[in-house]
Length: 433
Ligand SMILES: [Fe+2]
Image (cartoon, helix red, strand yellow):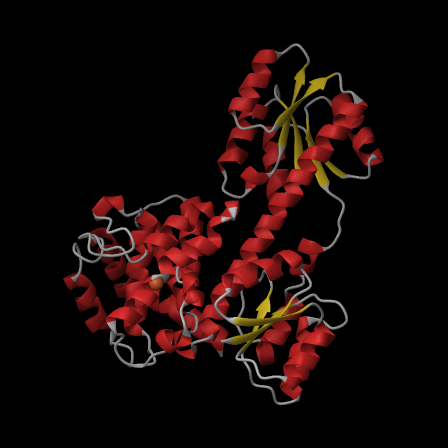
């Protein structure tokens, strides 16, 4: 496949180029150059960063559509939206201005948590002088509320406080799948080794001795904020992966929104089976990304109408391992790598790539496998129309305990009968119009 990738961000270009190495990818670094290129050469897919020098992604998209170019266009943004920018997507791109804040230069924000006003004021004075945006909280509960309201880039946290102490705050934040990335500095008396150790055991990233030394404060905040920025970039990279997952779908109009539906249905199944909230998010993300590796499968195989030969089937099966490889270097996606790798295992051990059996297959992968099968059976494919829901459910029941996990099939049957699954599809149908 021949693709045009327009993005001024080096890291995104590297990531896409690596993931799309089996395709012919032409890269442009600004909007005007991308437009010129797209008007003069044929492409099968265009990936457009939204914020680019000279012309933005939506301006390029509008210009291309005005000239009659109908090539599918995928916007590279952090916001979930339909794959094609025009005509509804243009509005969506403008509304997705939150993406800009992700990359724009901004003042780092620091939350100072201490019940003693004099300590807060002292830190506040130092930090504001260094140019940071500083907020205050007087105890642990206030601190958690402040984090909920606006996630800070760094937290300076006293330990002994009324209502909820600093160690408990630290433990709670570090147990949260996203908040755990906020660096936390425990504030302790310089001779209080026990508290310092408790803080580190609770997951604190560093400690600062009272009375505060301005130089020490400066260095520690800088180091931790740099680390924080790196984590934020990893998150941005994750957004690129989601765009890539949509690019996979854009190659094949028949499976549009398949991944998004699998993610949402998997999340519903997980909720019904009683998994915790953080894992629900991982299920959704793993569900959306499960077939990312199909980017490495040739069009002739991916879009082939009719049965695949053994050789073609082997090439198709590579996609689960390939998807894991693309995501492997990204620390922030580690929790759903097993979903991507194992979503084609079968509980009787005859699946791929590792022939895992029953409970050895990670639960997330068993759930996504059920959601994926349901959606694949009930939606139209290049080579056949979608099955009626009753028939698809019979099929799943027949494979319950051999191909699919029996609990997952049971949960899915419940969600189909109470209308939850239909609601997910209807919501996406509305977005796609
Ligand atoms: Fe798959």
